[in-house]
Amino acid sequence: MWRLTGRNGIRFVVHRVRRRFTGADDRPALDDAFSMRTADDVARELGNMKGALMKAGQLISFVVEALPEPAQQALSQLYSDAPPMTSALAASVVRGEFGRDPEHLFLDWQREPVAAASIGQVHRAVTRDGRDVAVKVQYPGVGRAIEADLANADLLYRLVSSFTLKGLDTRALVDELRTRMRDELDYRIEAANVDELRAAFDGHPFVSIPAVVPATSGGTVITTEWVDGLSWNEFLAQASPEARRRAGESIWRFAQHAIFRLGVFNGDPHPGNYRFGPEGDVTFLDFGMVKRWAPGEWERLAPCMDAIIVDRDPALLVTAMEASGFLREQHGLDPQAVYDYVSSPYRPYLTDRFTFTREFMRDTVQRIADLNGPHAAVIEQIDMPPSFVMLDRVVWGVSALLGKLELEAPWRAMLLEYRADGPPATELGVAELAWRRGRGIGGWALTGR
Image (cartoon, rainbow, N blue to C red; front, side):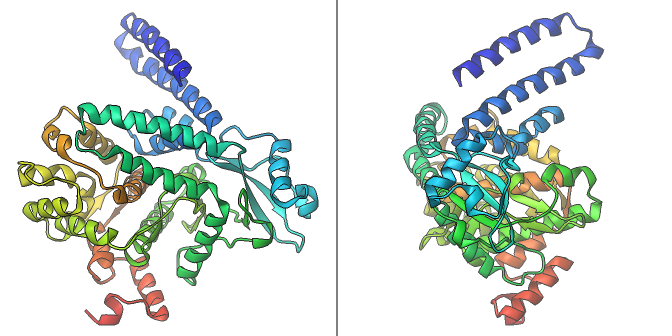
């Protein structure tokens, strides 16, 4: 990381000098070239590091819209195209898990991976009974790397909180992240997550989750049904507006149903975790980082969301934030100032119709992160309860995806379907409602409200 920082620091100095002697018309091209080289360098280094730092790169690559398009494209390789481990090393992991080489365990085994990301890489194979499958193999030593990354993250959080987020309980935040990432390292936990969510979404009209193959799944290897489909970048390049709408709304509704109705949701919604059909059908992958609401967790957070979206009441929001741990009592903040800051990511749900755009994401991230701007007093006193960490990742992650898809919809009415048992606001809402009726899942359709 120090070498990466030093290398790009020197590159920046050289770039600024060159810029001074470049005409105004040629500066945008020079800036783009600088961003592209820097992003390529960062993607290559983070891709080799794996673990938590690579996950940070994944998040930055699709949430931070201030980066030029070429730079975002370079970082997008962190979704599934990071440098893989050697075929011999992957085979050794399989052999260590099952006592047999993959060529003997499977009827057919592709030595070269089809995808490589932060925790493991995926090989295509055929089981002994003839099923096409995806086999995810964990990188050896990635657990130790993540522990080291999170130890450094703890130091970084403490440094930041010493001069900005003075009320932030950094230890609790890092402990929550560490717990979720430790879960992700045990593929037996992921297999159980897949089984649970597949059962919960059984027969769903637009959510598809591949089944686990238990016989060739263990602690460091997990095998699931193979799914053909487009990657995120491939889908963006060719999807029609209708396909984009269906895909984006499907991802959004999958998250809402899981959060509000199941209390079990995927905390890692980055673009590499989906496969798309040409018409916008979505298959959901990778359930290692799953969050479950512990008793009382959601009950403490929900009043804050209701105060923002349902009631739109600053005073009620401050009361709820004090009760949930976002604010300490006697903070002296103006309720309207708190509401203006906290509601920033939820603007799509405060109006009848809204279009998610990349500009909205860029402006919102800048507003939230502006430590010296108009919301500095609020930022200085606000805390983040550990239970909110995974939910926050989902809010930002799904919003970023919708921004890239540039989707317009009645998001407020759609959210009220889940939060206040409101009537369905779109065709997909009607389809989901019919599915819920068929399964006897409570809500608006069954109460008649």
